[in-house]
Length: 489
Image (cartoon, rainbow, N blue to C red; front, top):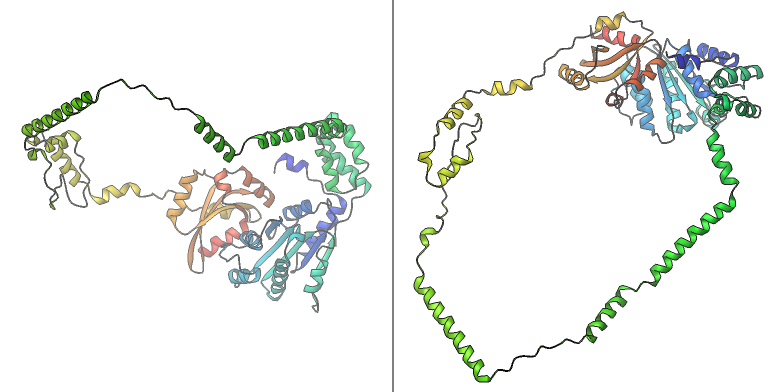
């Protein structure tokens, strides 16, 4: 865990009391728990802190809700964290997918949802039915913990639990006491505020509510933003002048466009100018009619004489025409289908076309043909074979603490796919590969590194190369990994 993360962890009395109650409620049996609080009450921090330090003995799933998520995306996020082989249809309900994959296995799972007020009623109902199903199964312990705004899901819970003995357990986040707020402000805000901002932040702290979110927001104040806002508010005359200048510019451009002639008017003006243009005429030299008749007769006689001379000098050039097209095709250097192609240089082709092939030395061509026949198909395809160089890391994974975590990168069906994955992303010696079976089918799981807690594992995703982050690696308990290894044995 980084020093920055440790310095930001501060458990106060009211928060510790809430976390202890959550740990007690989720320890023995399956429950449906709602933790509500106002905006800035610290719901997100409490959800992550509970999974990190108060539920480390359970298989965990954390869903951070966003408005643009669909139900299928949220189901996928939850099921990929709690199922060893996430073979499911995102369109199926949570109960169906979970029962299909864990029907004959035992589990101890906690599912935490932050901003649960963004969930649809259908998905909340599926989580409720999943908890009810777990209470009927002796081997299952499934706890659902929803962090939401105050009273945002009350009406839905009343409908879900109507006529049933089981009711959701409701917890509320209390406001910080004055002493806790002061301690929170000094240790998590003032320690990271610059000296020139200290007085401003302390003055702002006197007016905010005693909630962690609003107190933390004091450290994000920027002087530059206030200066910009103050300059805009303090100079309405400048704003009016700028707007007037823009309107004048837009009006001038519009007037200029309206003053331009239309295409029809432009064409009409061009036509009128053409009609008014006077075409000048050239004065022809004075010639007599007799001279013109004489010139025409001389030209006719010269043309006839040239034609007769050309006919006398014409020769038969049929031998110069290209030969007739035949249906028989000729090929040069053709060998068996399994052999390599023979490339003939342009000099040889030119010599063959000019009937000079007898002057060309074809010894080199014949040698290439003989060499190409000696290459076998097996030799040509040997370079495409991928050697297997990795080894399974069963012993290394079994030696790790079952309470630690790793990052699952991928799950494939063959050793070749594993080797290609390792070669493509050039992973170092922190990668651990192990086999497992599911419904009689062998799978190969690719994991990365080992981490003491689930939060450290989730933070490590950002340190991976960007191509690996696209696979959305997720934190996986070593307890679950070791059970899968035992199943393959």
